[in-house]
Image (cartoon, rainbow, N blue to C red; front, side, top):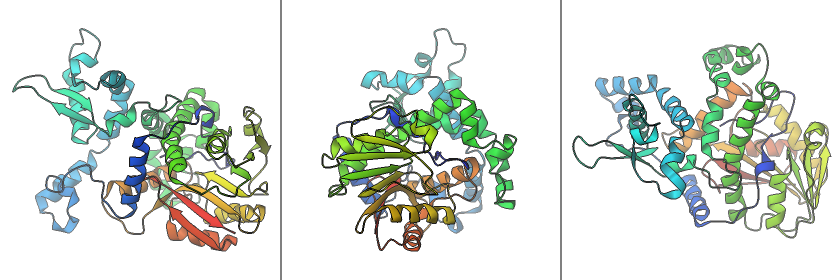
Length: 410
């Protein structure tokens, strides 16, 4: 996943202005339960080990199976590119049709008179093999029809903003971002140098590029919103008592302050919110009842409060930079105060579960697009960063399959 930071800014650019408080649903509760089971090493495989040779231990494969597995890896780019194409063609929305999700043939998903619907059908077959669509055939020789699976339904908006994971897919596969990937080797050979994105764009980092390209920036904002909404629902539903005793809450890198507003609507005991971000970011933030917008630099100081909240701030900074941020948080908190940091947390053990793959893949996306030496960390690595910064208490809560809530107590 993209993480909104650049060398010259710590603003999350989260498109939080599009977020709003939304009612907790039964689906959110199921998500919380799923996240707990994921943390207990439940494997979320997309295919059956009996039919997927890559799910077996690599050394247990026959030579033919090994060649097949490598063939799949070599052609893996087909999957996100096909997914991006069907989103741009409006396929998920057309199938969903307000909740109908009736299986449709490729011909019905294209303009009338299209010369060759089989081209789209080939994309849909591939994505059906990856669990995005379900495939239906009424009889031999009949047209294949496709509906959205649970995975495919993440491409359909459900939150108040109208954003979804479709925006996340589109953001990741814009031409400008795709151009960075061939430079990944350079990041390995020269990790202190510019990240691959900057190398591919004449030294311009990703967020400077977003600042110059309004359309790319809007795609990124919607992508972050599409990811933020379900996570914030899971947080507010599952973090019971987490904000007890907090009268003043500071959101570091809070952008427009919308996440802070969501928290304050659900937690009535918070009397004041402080939305802290770069001066030019908070200057554009809308007025919010009970919230003060404060501009500054988190590497210099952070406003005081009973608790500090941050979401996706630490991932693209080095260990030394993270320690500096955490030390300033520690200094801004009273004794017993806590920092609530929401970050992806990689497992200590590498396995083939969907969760582990998603986290490690996202780590390489961060390396390629935003910061070569910024990275996702394990729970123990986050704990050690907190100890170095002076925090004495730490725990990690897994309320979402991808992002963890990290509590640091002074």
